[in-house]
Amino acid sequence: MENLSDSRLMAIANAKLVLKQAGYYVDNLWSIHDVKDDSLTDEQKMKALDMALTNEYTTEAIFYAIGVSVEIITEKIK
Image 1 (cartoon, rainbow, N blue to C red):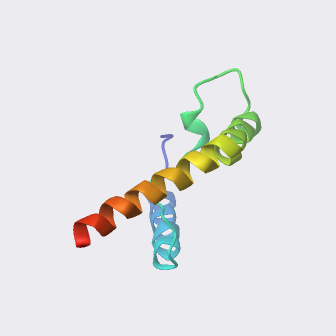
Image 2: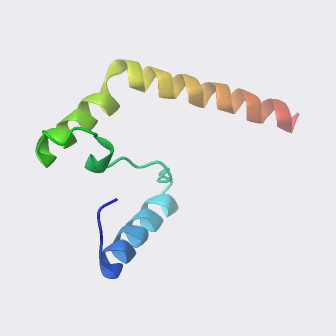
């Protein structure tokens, strides 16, 4: 991750806490720094993330994995 100031890191932590308290999963966030192509601008890297994370295959795979996880959890509860 890029070098962020302590105040910036605290702001990010606070934002994640607010979202988590509102029911959002925030333990797996992606950033432009995860796009490993230095020839791209930050805007292009963000577009690549958007395309990868919102495409139909990714969405279906996530919902499938959530369903399997729910089945595992509910089987353990019984």
